Length: 234
Ligand SMILES: O=C(O)COP(=O)(O)O
Ligand SMILES: [Mg+2]
Image (tube, rainbow, N blue to C red; front, side, top):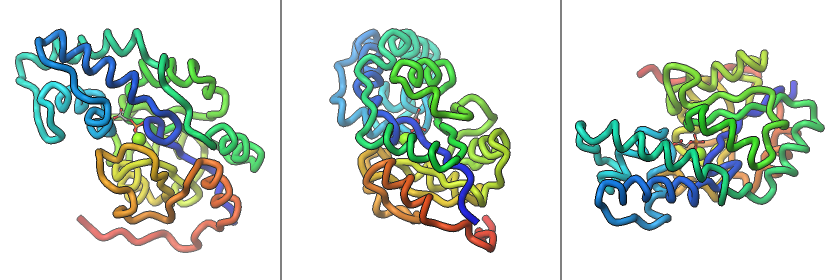
């Protein structure tokens, strides 16, 4: 049996959104009297949702936390700035449009599963011209828990009417791989994304694909595993 659905990550997989995220994050830092950070540093802060990005940007470190009293204003400053620039400099990665077209031609159901909040996900997809390819969109605040929790993947499968074992996740990070594994989906990773600054090759996956078109080809040539993957108990 062939796969029926593909669940695709947004930031770092479909779109290079870092120029806009960095602009908004630095506008927030400047508003707090701090110097801007380099874009490649901010790129490593992307992946665990907006609140984490604000904590990391304000503290200047991956594990850092913003002062509790400052956080609500910092979050608001980031949101205000990101609403203005979201999608302005964002670029669709090479092979994405071809990959999505190939997936649709195969009759696959396709969803976006992102940790980005819905207020930014939908305008971004519209602005970069990708919205029409997706049968479902699951954002960071669509369900109670974000990737690496499996909940967003399971919700996307429900919306698409497929079993997790019939779905392939395509992402750029450990968050995607962990969520996919825990949900019982296969997972492919692209090497050009963010992955919080770490090498994607170190992550256990079903394959590294150079582009989304390669992911579409992998899906067309692969069969659904006949047994449910076994997950060690926590
Ligand atoms: O908002 C983020 O942290 C990144 O979201 P992603 O899940 O699309 O990579
Ligand atoms: Mg990502």
